[in-house]
Image 1 (cartoon, rainbow, N blue to C red):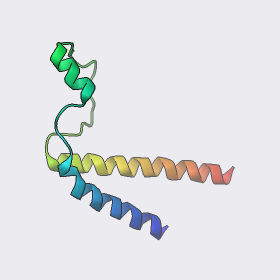
Image 2: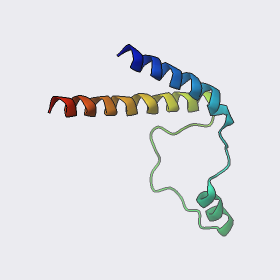
Image 3: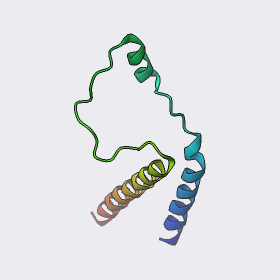
Length: 82
């Protein structure tokens, strides 16, 4: 279990270092839709967005890592017990 937590800490540190390098430009599909003028209003707004600031992005990235780990760990425990 300690190895898992060490891995999560390493991932969090790497995320904090690499995150500022992420592009703020839209992806290919989004850029094409903007050029063509097909961009529409969103159907819904996500309650937890990535945010605009570096701090918000780090928090959302860490939350994603924790949730993904939790779901994976829970599924592994269920599979091991079955």
